[in-house]
Image (cartoon, rainbow, N blue to C red; front, side, top):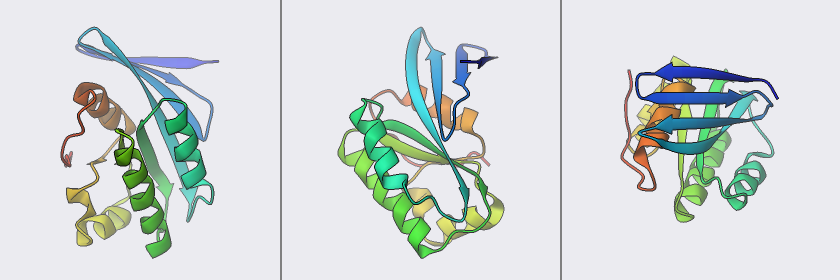
Length: 144
């Protein structure tokens, strides 16, 4: 498998390439954390709940949903994201969002979901947040 390694002062991020699930290995403060990035595309992702559940069952409850390819989202899509966020939270994990286009981010802000689900401009910012947060979920972080 090919991989990229990015370094940010005390943090190293190794990115595996297979999609729709990308594995990130983030090393910060000498601790390595393995994270899953689930890339969503188009208007919907029909297998999102099953995919998130399978990742949590594999012992990876800290997940990043990359919405950078999502152009539109309706109430069903928002509902799915909230449902998988709640599923991760109920199992001691955390789900964060990354790469939202302004129009998509506005929807989350209008619904005040940005106060509940952490949203980041990039997958890398989300990965560093999750790696540093350890096992204790933190409140929403507005990176921009």
